[in-house]
Image (cartoon, rainbow, N blue to C red):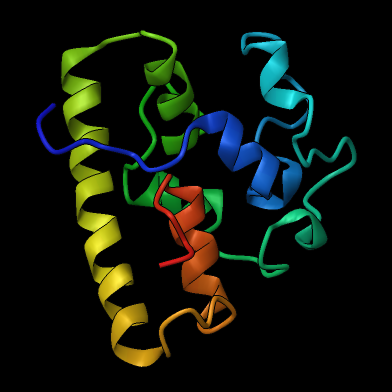
Length: 141
């Protein structure tokens, strides 16, 4: 879709540290092994220290379900969709839905960081930066 240009690959995101290392809850069998060579992964549950910015960021799964952000095709949410999309899977309606969500997410958080932070202060607004990272945006703006 035009305008969908993630700045980070799933492999890069996993290496930097996302979702407390527990997004896949231990089941990574459908993804390339190379994605996990340097990934920050937890086998025993969400670990904030595995996130790049060492903060929890994002809504719980219950909110994702209430807001209807979860599709039957990707029961773990946006990042699962992005991983599968990056591997070549295409489902027109699901892709359009998730790409629109991605396009709406980044600009508002990037704008808030630029408005409220000194340039190059990557530790300003760590929750928003962690959220950007979890949406494949470069958090080091």
